[in-house]
Image 1 (tube, rainbow, N blue to C red):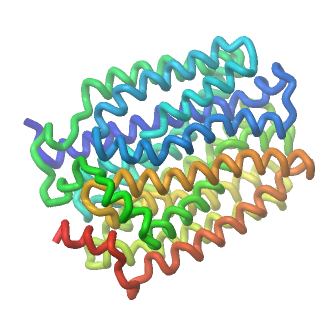
Image 2 (cartoon, rainbow, N blue to C red):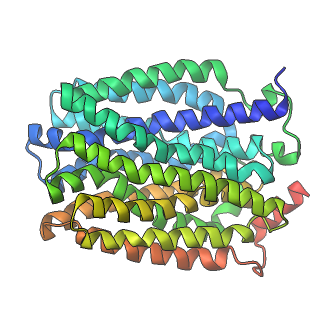
Length: 421
């Protein structure tokens, strides 16, 4: 049998792979949005509605998915969900009308609902606290690295063969990964146990635990703070290719290359600062929750430099500010995603992750729509990026008291500490 250390890092790599493919499936629509909009005659506001179709359904299933992850486990949910990712991409590729495209986006949102919550749950179950930063950065870093690969690859595919070819590409990619997941992923009970009691975060999710989660002011604070992070990073993710094409008139292929650079910076920043640095701090004796606060708040502050994009005079200027902003947000992301495993009671990690991602995806839906509307009426992306700065400031104000060292623990945190003591 595989030794525990090798087993958990192999699982961590598989979780990262699932998120990588997951974000290819999401990103293809952003890359294909301009030629698709031209074919169906959409303006920016109408395109925003279509782009948000994924977010609507993804948002609505987050709380149920949190419960299902706690009840059923990660393995079987993804065995069902991943083939549905492929079906959604295929449906888009063969769509003969806008209604079918929207239906496919809704299906993708439903199918990808358990992905991030499940990865957070599996990481809490497989990895001890001193490795949690790197493990979380591994799967969340895949959300950024996916864009490093996806933007240039999909831009090339779509430029060469049309926007439908991009969705055929992600269909095949999802089907191949469905085989890899079925063969490779096991819940912790299927391997030797991880080296400490973190394995106790197994299945559960009772009604009492849900009430405790929903009644915790701390959990609500980190959930709404995460929504502020998600609003900004998803506005950039969704609209970046359109921004480069509309603001600077660059071709689709060049837009993909410009968009790749900020996500590469974000990937490195997340793995080094959000992962390795946080684990080093915890290993050195810093409190697992309070020690993460300066990293998270510093990342959000750096993310606010997205507002400086409004002064970009060239694509390279925009790439610089977007790289700085996304690098900061990427540092904050694994810290935020590690909090369910640190603050939730055993059996409710998925519930806390589901609430966080529900708030995140609700903000994302609003952000995609608002960005399209603001860009349409102002004929510029300046206003959407400046508004994102305000949203991040609100997020910092929410996280500041929730993660402070002298904060009295609420009921949820107390139960967690008892379980792992």
